[in-house]
Image (cartoon, rainbow, N blue to C red; front, side, top):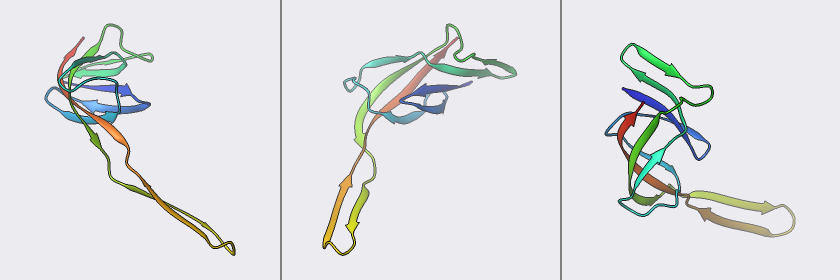
Length: 103
């Protein structure tokens, strides 16, 4: 059994027991969370596709911790002006463990 969910403007294929990193959510470590934007649920030969979401479907997950992604380097350069600026950015993510998929 697997599901396609949407959170943070991105789509993820999940099944029970998976650990995924999603855009930062306002939850504490260890909190239970329900994701209600379920776009597709497949269980063996039975497939339910939402228009745009599957009615009554939810994914229960547990927030594990907040993590940082890899560092992205931003380099700004202006020719003939002697301006060079190098900065970095690390995006924050929330790690979720998928507990169950409810139809």
